[in-house]
Image (cartoon, rainbow, N blue to C red; front, side, top):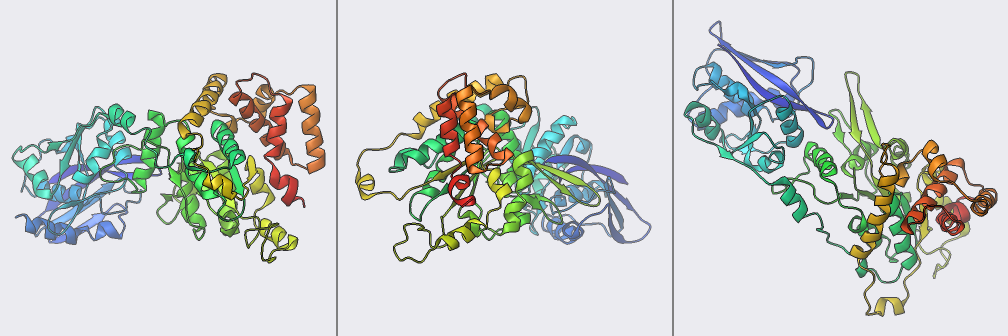
Length: 511
């Protein structure tokens, strides 16, 4: 007897429905699995056999042929255990299968029949709804994530026996429902850190505010203990809240990577990713034999923090150049190509020298040559793609001992939101959300300069030997500073402040 059961496969951040055809006949004995399964799927027969035996069923001693269509697409992982097991039981008439075609069935089996969570549940649920399936049956740990998709019944199962009884005896499975908008609104302002905890560093805070208002990449240069990491960790608290659309996009990526917690249904705050400097280029950008999203995609719609940037391998840093421009990553393989979104705000930090204290090194262990060699670990083209360079000075004792709290993230965020709203209105007819995304054509239209500002930026270009890309960055940052002041025109003091945010061009890079 031939039975069709439906599962799903993940490619990039999208899902594709997989038809699992199970055919059982009496012409011999055997277990044949075809359709480009990987080793984890090939090993499923052992898990299925033990699981069925432990719940009172068995794999029949006949010729079993299982085809996973479309047969030319690679399938991976143990998530098909449950769908294959149910298909075998239905094809061998051990259970009824009247409405089995109405559901997507996914789950990994333990040997005792309990179900283990799987990856990529959100895109699977979205695809199931688009293709008109009545519902989706999943391990209980995954159901909150799938339940954010409306117009789709999501059923939770703790073991395969519950699924068997659902089809065979009509026993109801637990149906999971959540109020997506309510849950989203309740947790949208959950931040563990606040800018009021940062002592001093007013110039750096201002630079962070400008960066957040325009979505600009920023690098912090300063000695150890000056507060660079502390400032970086508080950037999400002043960024605009995620929209529901952005939250779904971000959740989808984290779901595919298996980074969603069992109690989490939806990402409600912008992600903050801080990979260690020993990370490989594949782990940062994404890829592998079976492509997975990297750290820059996990930071999509959020912040990627690279602490001590020169300590990262040069090849790792250079692979970021294209994603910083295009805001997406393309992973190419012989048989297929996968695109991962990567629209993130880069926040980097670094010491000015190997010892960290140049030019104020108390032990005189640093020289201008060592500082320059350390700076040369960052390529010019990469630094060009970072809009704001800000020097973070050592915090004096008087500032540390001061009892008065600094400005709260909530107050800074209000100004950032006002500036973002101005940008949203300005670019409403374009596929642009904030100033950092504008190209040369939009820059020419929206970043007009008066004669004083023009002469100022011309002088800076000549004196600092800035590249064309640096000129473009100065215009974008000046536009953001003007937006923070709610000024329609870019004025000379806006341009002047933007030029000050190119300290690596001014002092170090061309030293």
